[in-house]
Length: 102
Image 1 (cartoon, rainbow, N blue to C red):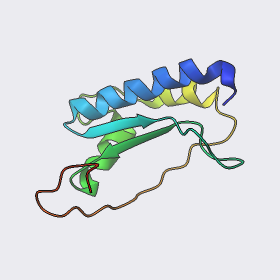
Image 2: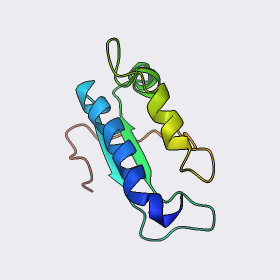
Image 3: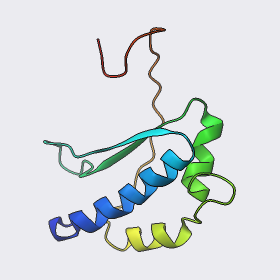
Image 4: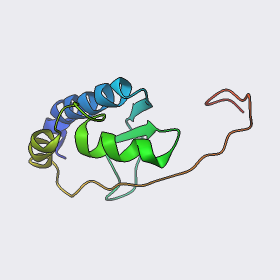
């Protein structure tokens, strides 16, 4: 996105975060300090306990009765310079380890 659209994009991503929280999922908005050419300017991460929890957030804003995100994603796509990428990453934690800890 263009720098002029950054705050608007953050607003769209925060609404996605609210939907994820409503579905009981941890999430975070990441603003990379440095990035390679063509890299993401903003990132949104959701931490589901299983992949079954991911699709309702992506398609229905958090599950049955949640916000239909079609209109929000259409408006968001108007300010994006490239289509958003969806990456599924897996991070196994040692039982009892704190998130972000070593």
